Length: 361
Image (cartoon, rainbow, N blue to C red; front, top):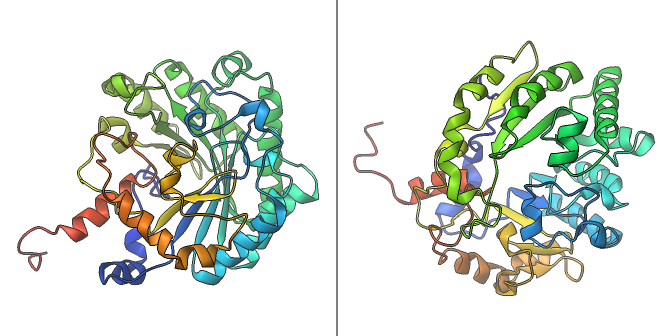
């Protein structure tokens, strides 16, 4: 079954006006922002990339984006032309008590809203139902299909709670006939491949719309022990294909084949995607890439959303200086494999460096 959500690619080509403005040298508003809402997490996944971004786990559970700046942020995003925001930052967004209000306010401002979470803290009352009514998609990050595997991979005893919350959301969607897409995400590592097929079956049982299986992102320093072994993903090809075959009816098992098999290599020499896709940390700072969240690269900070409005930041000279600065990074030696901006970078590079005889389509 085809990936109807284009998760292994991009949709930037569906925004030709914004792309044309960029090609013409105009200072555009971003199309999408990945939004961090907290600095902590209630579980500690073995593959957590947030650990390299400043995720403080239990120590950071009380550190989150303040209410007033957050609501101003989502409102102004709609005003300046941001089309979508995913609450998907370096830590668990549901630790922020203002997350549900931000979802509703963002949608009311004309921004498509999404949420990625481990789900354990999801509210099963009116706040949770209101969120489901205003979300475009909701994704549960889960890479285990049994309690024992969940304890090993996510280092938490809350497997049953996570399933309970998924079932609640699926039931609410069906009862209210909501358009929200509900999915599961598995981060495939070199040690949890035995969960591929059980998780694909579990997704079908739970009644979600999809299970997506993605690569484990890692730094070029091999912090998580994956970058140096990206070629090992080839070992799972048959099992992944079998998982895809479990797609049935409205349930879609999606494998990010391109990112699982490209060995972390890039076909472009510069990060051009920053004006289109931005990242804000759980501390409220805006960056062109999540790898700068750790506080060691403040020269790439575009502004502090707790102190200034998004509109002011995007219009500032400092913002565009960072956009220019990030294009000078050696993406082959510095950037982690298969970053979120990877697919649109490939597309934008091809537009900036077209082949000969472009009229022979």
